[in-house]
Image (cartoon, rainbow, N blue to C red; front, side, top):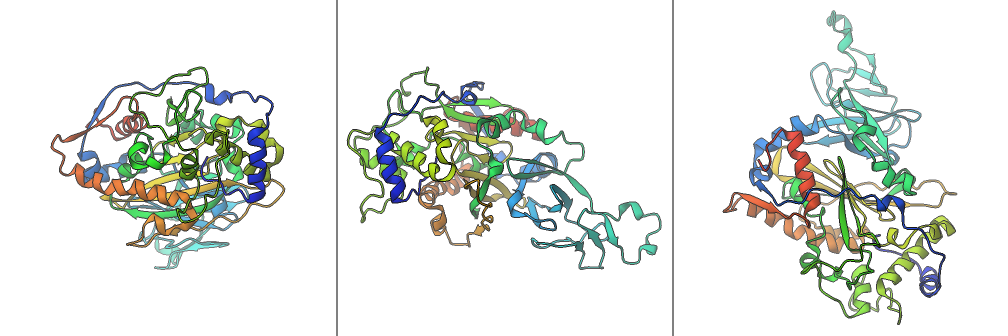
Length: 465
């Protein structure tokens, strides 16, 4: 669960409910599913992050073959709306082509290959190439082919070339490979951890969308957010008190193309591993690390004597969601309001689980191995008796700006600024690495290893190559 913006009335409710007993809620069944990933130290040659040859190979082996998120449904809500989705040196038009139907086309005229769409569009009835005037219906079929008589026998090539599409959780996926497996097969059991568990992302709306071009490889940026091991050093303000009943201790479970980070089961009752974290003695400091706090102002959420700060955070979140989904919030276990439920879907989507709003996407910047695009979306619930709010437009940070220049991210802007302070130095360090390889830990960096094992499979690489 990320930062809560509960108004004062909700905070009053939280103060009361933090003290009041509540009927026991069963531990979520989907969080009891365990599928441990192999534990080993993995070594990877640095070329994977810094070589232009690898970046070009990724286009052929991954981006032309894998299921990938192009947009959210609410970004193109009406028939005739479309977005231009770009990945590496590829470009696609993702069209809301009919009621409850979405199509994707390679963004290239079949005549002389000019890009058909240079920007997003809304409510169109056709697509038109501005070079020679060829046009197409929004289902991709040819509408008017200038001098069609001049292409005898070419009628079968007049339509836009289509990519496969699929939908899950309000996301529109595309796959350029006509022989790709169905999206449902690629996702596997992932839906069981979302809509079947009472967290349907198709019922969220894109509240915030911030995008930035970073001076690092897309894999470096992604790895910075895949594991929590860096928190002690990079985010010292986030080191909470540690004890056996703290729900934030974690494990990693492998579900194929999807890896989930989840809290240890209540039955584990294990001590934190040595060196994992330090202890905070001040409850107010724990709360200040979680909420927006300006040191020259009183704390937004004050610590209550006798109430553990983690429980206070949970109850504040419960009060916030009571204003959105009503008393149904009492059907959810505390671990779903404060449990560190992370997720990663190969190759580049990270929709956090349960009540967290956070969703990341990472893309290469053309075929430049030293640059990438990172996007942060906050996907929020809204009252069921009200229409879905319009999707936030992407706020692209300008050169010279930092994530701190995106105030809509709230407290997360400060956290991401700390994270992104590392990635450019990692990219530079890879080029001056005396070993020629990096090492990934067997436990703390499990999701990073999982990603790279899948990366090797898609790229046709040997272990660590």
